[in-house]
Length: 234
Length: 385
Ligand SMILES: Nc1ncnc2c1ncn2[C@@H]1O[C@H](COP(=O)(O)OP(=O)(O)OP(=O)(O)O)[C@@H](O)[C@H]1O
Ligand SMILES: [Mg+2]
Image (cartoon, rainbow over all chains, first blue to last red; front, side, top):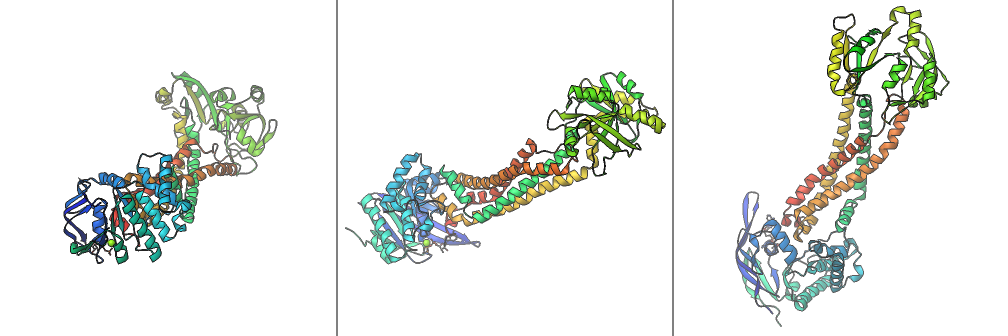
């Protein structure tokens, strides 16, 4: 299944300014992610995992280097061009779910569809389908505060897949969950990858989570450490 | 639909905070409306003054009269269509605090110059036939319970003695802006008594009311009248009725200015309160804004959501405030009696209230909107946890 690269990263540099000082975060990074891949990014705290993920997801911009996704160099897109590109191509899963507290599960999942031209009825159908996929049909009218952490993350997964994006990015998706809920979420991500062929990039600290991915890359001080481990191949 | 729901639920997120802010806006808009109404009432006389009526008075001061003989000479001036005269009587009805304006007028010429005073023909006839008769405005009649046939005693202050008048007619205003708190009686009657009691004050008038053919000629006609009396015993000053009325307002202008300043201060204060509410709101939601931006929502949509919420709160409070202005103003008008001849919430005041509310909403949303628009997604997301 892993074939043509969907993400091509070439000589990527990223640094932050902090108190007048330049803090280098990513240093000359080059690698590919193949279509249909499920990649886990691991590494010590501060190694630049989130930074890398944010660049791939188009919510931050590199200092230099190429960042091609599906052939398009997104580092060259304008602010609003990038926003439209994200809406069409990226599904986000966050550590703290990031649901809108004033919206029900249903409405949270519906949110990204407002940026599409879909009518009400089409949106409804899609949202119902997505909620079914994360087994939350019976909770669609509940607000995030009425749901457990695991359930909220399932809503977030439904929201991430609702627009059928090219790429799903997840930053520590199980970081705030107990072991059972985490297992649940990882199972769902695995199914998204295997059954629907979704390309997933996941940042995680958790060895157990990384083991569920197809491939694990280790980042240290902004560089990929060799010994990329193919943990799971079938 | 979806956005409206989002705006509304966001607004109601902190019910106490939103409720208190709305209460503040309610009070501010109500106070603003009442203060504006007072200011308008102050100017009402001048606002409704005709531009085809001039007032000629003694150039030294309104206190000094003019000879009755001037009337005929004014009539000769080109552009003048008719002339009438009136004296300020300044009597007291029962008690000093019962203030209302009383004029001794040349009834046959005066009332026709004020078509906005509506009098039933038979009452008008009765008034003209009774030398001790008087005409009172509807508002005045209601305030003191005057009815046709009642005797109204006035204790003179400028003209000594107690004067009894019989109400022969009650006039209505052609519209709500007409002053119906006045009291008119026959100048001839006043003059007749003065001839007997203080002959040197007889045959004089306080002001001439001069009708002209075109309002555009007001300045020229005024100048011509005053020129005619230059170097005579009593020089005249002629101006439009509006300018004349504004002259009265000018005497109390400091108070009006103070009221106006306070009315704007009230709005300024509520603006600060509302801005604080919205700033707090935005600060708490940075992560949500960042999330929406990550999902592809552009700055314009976030700004629209924030402005929508701010406007919703401001307008809800203002709607209640505007609605309350009417009954409260009515109650005020009732308590104030004839102090302000015209006291009502005008359309202009309501528009000002609405504009103030929109301004408050917009200003309050400005900073949070800018902040959300400029927010970098990665910074906003770091706001969690
Ligand atoms: N917006 C920012 N401004 C300044 N410095 C930043 C910013 N974002 C990240 N950094 C710095 O860049 C480095 C990498 O941060 P990053 O969040 O990518 O690490 P991480 O590998 O995801 O760590 P963790 O496992 O703790 O989440 C850190 O030193 C961090 O302090
Ligand atoms: Mg991180």
